[in-house]
Image (cartoon, rainbow over all chains, first blue to last red; front, top):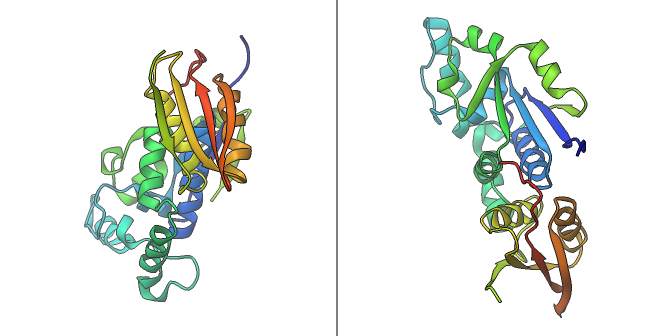
Length: 159
Length: 82
């Protein structure tokens, strides 16, 4: 029994609403067809899994608090194009629901249920002054070396 | 004969077709059966094959009506890691 499980590792960097949909669609879909899935969250990518879903002054130090407030959390993810001051993600969610397509929230929930591994970039957390507890379901905080080791032998995507 | 669990994913789209099938299969015991009602096209092409790949048994695929099909699956003993 040496059949190795197929593996998909993603770096969730952008924090855009549409790109987060891509991350979690791939994550839940791959996990559902038997892949091991790892997501490494860094910089803006954190916004999708912040426990404080709206604007919150998280972090240690004035600048970190200010930055985290500006980042806005899950409820303020911008669309990468045609954002129109933040209206478009709400319109997009409405259209998704209307057409019976899973929303971002549902995709994140499905990913968690299917055992997708969430990892946090240690360096970005230092900059933002946050802790793994500030985010949902973080399994571990990692650096580049550990991520490369985890991703070895599988497919890697940067989104 | 044990009861067959029923799952309708005709209104679902990728990736929820796979997600709901996988989660439902996980809630069953080995040897129990699941009947998945799905649509022709992407779900019919991919759900049975991915289920097979994960060690479950596709017993039969029945055409119900129009583009609706039912796939009868027996849960296998292949470990499904979650």
